[in-house]
Image 1 (cartoon, helix red, strand yellow):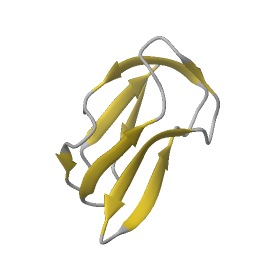
Image 2 (tube, rainbow, N blue to C red):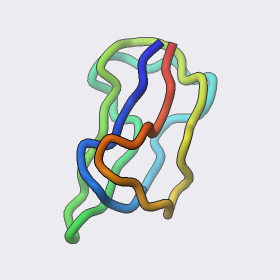
Image 3 (cartoon, one colour):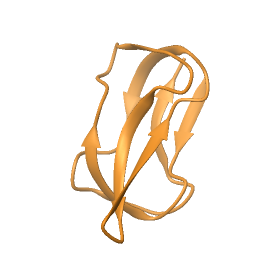
Length: 70
């Protein structure tokens, strides 16, 4: 099981995967917006998205869990 975590504080601008979807290593899971910049957050390993912990528009802090992949 892998936890995808926010690398910095920001708003969830776009979620690019759905629960149950297969993802590849380095595939973007969400895109954060911080200081008018878009920051993609990618899965580190391939797997299936088990749970999304955020919704578009949510604010996350650095280190917050965004998704769980297994």
